[in-house]
Image 1 (cartoon, rainbow, N blue to C red):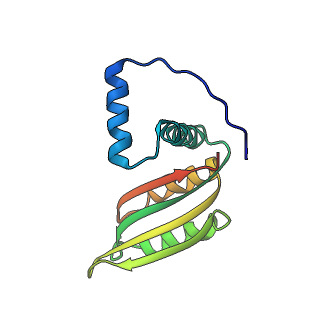
Image 2: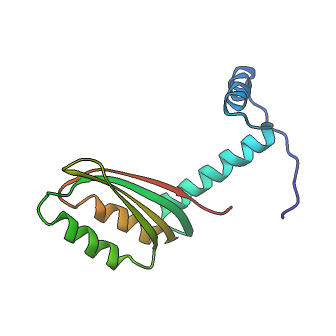
Length: 135
């Protein structure tokens, strides 16, 4: 584990009050842990946006499985990006709709391309990626 470095941060008192309130609502142990978590989240997001580095995450999607060729297209896309896919979970929501959760690990750019390709499939109702990195 890396050694910890102390540093000072000057913020307006109202902003610190809001931050302390946030920490309390979330049940975080202290400001330091809250700051570390926020920094990791921001750096992970930057990796996702820039398309560089190894990221981990999930993509949750809802689609109409009666849509023309959506199941075949989804399967083909998952095979094309198979090296980034760890596993998938498929749930039948109702007669027409399926929910799929895809767990991913790999190059941020490659995973972004996969998520973008999912969005082009006809019959897809929603896509929600959640991306993290080890920092």
